[in-house]
Length: 323
Image 1 (cartoon, rainbow, N blue to C red):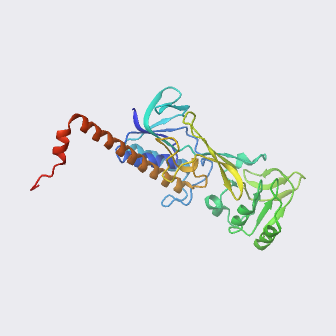
Image 2 (cartoon, rainbow, N blue to C red):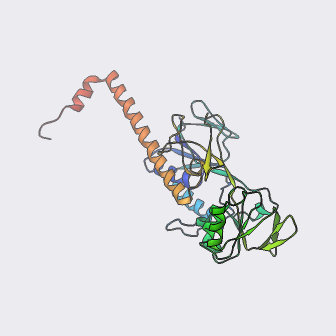
Image 3 (cartoon, rainbow, N blue to C red):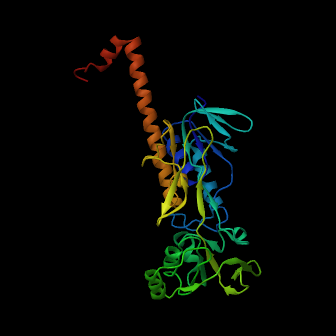
């Protein structure tokens, strides 16, 4: 094999797994397409010791740390993984004993003109990732299902929150009571676009033509796990609050998938994991992969010893008195 482990994806999960493996003296190759999901964001938050660091800066720091332990890198996209863990790239194929998938998610934004261009800046999705940065501002929540959850969470950060029902559900009587109790305004009618002035989001434009002034818009994207062809892994739907919000690669708590030898970490399997949680999951998967390799290597060594030198094995296991 060319490598003990090939890691697919060079974000927090992939790099953390690579470091854990390399520190156990494993040969590791990280393959990364260079398109991190969080690239549009100004900073990574809730990452102890690196609060507010730019996403690409964090990735560069992680790469340097991994490289210092001998991890190799290829800036490419995996086309497929063939039997025997032959990993096909654009111009070559490499082989591995184990695979760690850290391929992340793809965000599918609501089909509203202008949202994609502002994504990660003043079009947001997570109160814990970006909420503090829009505290006290005029925040709009765009409902494409049930926007209550996001509206309630962002009302903790601002007294000026408006829920745009758009294509979402009509609130129930209990939900109307909650909205009133939290001081959340509600606007009916579909949203046709957003207003931007001097590279700054300034409002939400309804299909009627009315513009509601806002400083930020919160959306709930559909999140889709990226699955590498050839592995035989089937993504499964992810539900939240009774709705399917996307898909994930199923795995057990160690990151082991249904395919022996293939592990997954980060958002590809845990859609709600923030960066620090993805890094922790990558490290755990790296540890479990190394443990599995040690078990395999030990078993093979025992089998070789029994076949080729049983006497030597007995001698090695005989206690030496006085030592």
